[in-house]
Structure formats: C-alpha cells, structure tokens
Length: 247
Ligand SMILES: *[C@@H]1O[C@H](CO)[C@@H](O)[C@H](O)[C@H]1NC(C)=O
Ligand SMILES: *[C@@H]1O[C@H](CO)[C@@H](O)[C@H](O)[C@H]1NC(C)=O
Image 1 (cartoon, protein in one colour):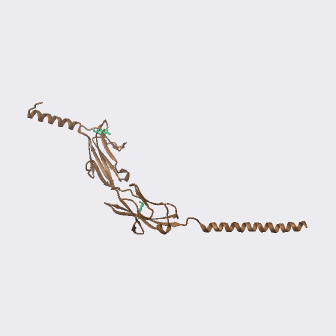
Image 2 (image 1 turned 30 degrees about the horizontal axis):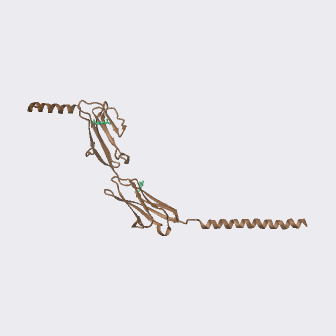
Image 3 (image 1 turned 30 degrees about the vertical axis):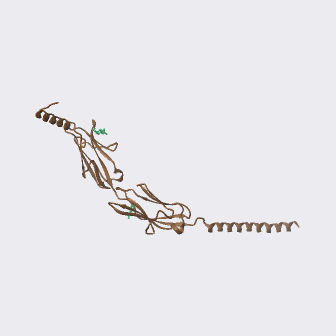
C-alpha cells in the first residue's frame, strides 16, 4: 500500500482516537506502584483509584476472584478502594478494576506486603531421654529470611551431634531424633536474619527428663510386698485360731 504523508497521519490519528475510545480503565495507587506491583508495609494503608475510559460506565473491583462490595456513588466513572490495615494475607493479592458490562476492559495491581518475622521470647521444653525433640519457629517473612540455630550461644554445628534443621519459609524446625542429656540439654535459639528488618530470634530452654521413673516403680513394688505380707500373716494367725478351736 502506497500512502501520501497527510493520509498516513490521518490514519494514525484515527487509530489513536479509536484506541482511546476503547481504552482500558486505569488504576492509580497510593503509594505508587512499579510495574503493576505496589510494595507496602504490614498494617499500612494502600488506596486505589480506578478511572473509567472516556464515556464512563459502571466500575467493579475484584480482590483476586472475589467481587468487592462498593457503595453507591463509588461505581460510576471513578471508584476508590482502600485496604487498611494491610495484612500478611494481602501479600500477592491482585486488585482488579473493570467495566461492569465488559470485563475485558480492566486493569489490575498486585500487592507485595513487606513484613518482619513475628517471634520473640523463650519457651520451656522438656523431653524424655532418648526420645525425639522438635523445636520450631515461625519463619514467615517478606522478603524471606535466612535461619541459623544456636546452642548455648554458639552456632550449632548441624553436621555433628544428631540434629536435623529444616525451613520451608513458614516454619523453621530443629529436630533432635534421640535426645541425650549430656549432649543436648541447654538453651537453643533460632536466629532469623532479614535484609530489611535485621535479626529476630526465639529461644528454647530444653530440659531432659529420665527415661524411666525408677523411684515410683520401686515404691509400688515395696507397697505390694507390704500388702502381701500382711495378708499372709493374717491367714497364718487365723489358721492358728481355727486349729485351736477344733481341738
Ligand atoms: C482483562 O483484560 C484482558 C485484556 O483485554 C483480558 O485478556 C482478560 O481476560 C481480562 N480479565 C478478565 C478477568 O476478564
Ligand atoms: C512476641 O510475639 C508475640 C507473637 O507475635 C506478640 O504477640 C508479642 O507482643 C511479642 N512480644 C514482644 C515483647 O515483642
């Protein structure tokens, strides 16, 4: 096709007008997003504004697949949505605005919620000698954290001493398959290291109990012996009386 310059420009203008007529809804956010993703701190507030294309139309909001209930007066041409406070469950959530009568005219943003690990304090844990011990820390955080374990203030050497450490991004676990008091009793700490939030930790005071309760067992045996002897004596003394009476 061979076109003269004015014709070409006219066609381009026409094309832009047509694109504008059917243009998608636009979504702005506060704080502003980057590449369709809005980064926000836990418990902060984020607000979205959706604008209908020229010509207006009724707007709808969805949070992931769920339709958001909008008040009247917040649906025509311009619609505001506010998320407060932002929770951990909002991480990854997609907020989409669309024309009610044409879902293909839509625009969306995704939330990325930044949060520190939520843990602290010291827990008392007691286990029986030679049984399994399991210590666990909530390791959820965004961005994800690295986890190390300490024992009595020193970095735990996982290659020796029968420990298994795992972390799936939700729970960090330290398992001691067979607890030996001499080796394993003491203070354990899980240390979570975050690029933005620094270190967070939680401790466990692990105490190891005897495998079998020797003392109560002996006491029970001693008690049984006393009962049996008393019964035997009673029979013997009664027997003597019975024999006497028969004479
Ligand atoms: C949003 O718009 C795009 C582009 O028109 C379309 O492919 C997509 O299916 C729409 N989303 C929904 C949920 O309708
Ligand atoms: C410790 O963590 C718990 C659970 O996240 C929280 O409720 C509590 O306020 C925290 N305590 C301190 C002293 O940070």
